[in-house]
Each structure stands twice: as C-alpha cells, then as structure tokens.
Amino acid sequence: MLLARIHLGRNELDDAYEQLDIGVRADPRNVDVLAYLGFVSGQLAAAAFERLSTEAPNSARARQLMGETFEAQDERANAEAAYAAALEADPHLLDALLALGKLKRIRLACEEAIPLYERAESLQRTFESAYGLGVCHAYMQDDKAATARFEQAIERDPTAGVAWAGLGTALVRQGRTREGIAALERAVVIEPGMADAHYMLGMAYTSSGDPARAKAAFAAAERLRANGVQ
Image (tube, rainbow, N blue to C red; front, side, top):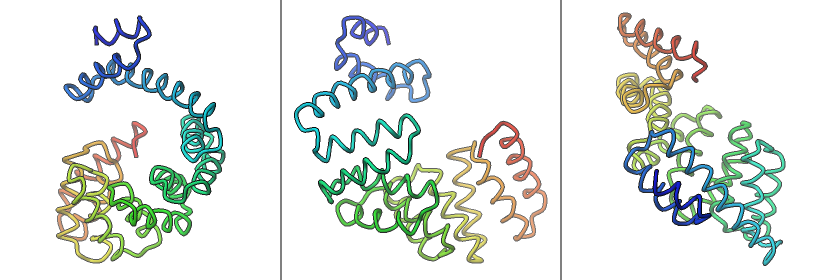
C-alpha cells in the first residue's frame, strides 16, 4: 500500500497498479487495497480509452471500452448499444460477447443472451459463458440443461459459490434433492452471505424431511435479507 501510494503521488500508475495487485493477492478482502486498486484501474482504463479513441475511434475495442464506461455508470441501455456496435465491428470479440450476454441476462432477456454465450463458448470456454448459460436455462425452466452448464462452470472454477448454488437449485427442482442439498451446502460454505442459497437449502431440507435444518437455513436467509443481501 505504501509503495503504491508513493507511485500514485508521482503519477506512476503502472507501478502503483503492480504494487496494488501484489497487495490484493496477499489480502483479497483488504478494503483499502481494493479501493486504491479500483481508482488506479479506472485511471489506467481512462488513459487507454483516450489513446484508443484517438487512434482508432471506430474500432471494436474502442466501442467495447465505451460499453464498459457506460456499464460502470449504470447506463445499461447505452452499454448494450456500445457492446453491440463492438460486435458489429468484430463478431468474435469475446469480451464484448460476454459483457453483452451478461447485461441481457441481468434484465432476463435470456433468449437474446443464450446465443451470445454460445458464440462465446465456441471461441473460448470460460466460467462466465457456462455460468451465464446455466442461469438462463434455469430461468427458462430447462433444469436439465441448466445442470449441465452449472457443472461446466464448476469444473472451470470450483470456488464459485454462485455456480454451486445454481447447480443445487436445478437439482432440487428435478427431484434430485440429496444431490441438490450437497451442492447448496457447498455453496453456503464458500459464500455464506447468499440469502437465496440459504432459502433454497431450507426448501430442500423441508422436502427431505429435516425440519430442524430447514428452520436454521430459513433463519439464515431471513437475517441476510434483513441486511439487504440477496
């Protein structure tokens, strides 16, 4: 942190970023390191975007970065338009495919998101595409397809609590309650703050005839939701 602040005072952004990257790997939950890393990353991105906009204003990367800027400002409609423009310039731009797919998934336009994620998968197999497809198939109540995609996501990142939660939910909805409970239990161990996962675990415990554990899981979900956590 001290070295990063010294570099930052000298406007040596690349060196500051390098020190902060070391810091966040040593202590991933350090609020001060994360705050400075966010600031320095934003400054570096702005500088890169300015250079790119000057040298190649209509390039796919320039439009992608514009989309990221809009997304950071929570201007999602403008972000979608910018990512779409990036894909018009380069249909194989993976970052834009994943970003546009995520924005469409967030607003539950899964019929539009699925083709984007599938195109991304054909270019490179990533956690983001597998997880996004899992969420979309689950939303469309295709739990068998969702299960397969969540399993792929977990293979690519076994530490992703959200993927374990998605898998557990899909399994429970197929009547595979015991397997679903195991996945949901893994999810809340990895990410204890997921209220929806605790609630779904309560439902699964109820179905399996375990009212004591169900009561504890529902109580955990209620506590988290009282604090504004989903």
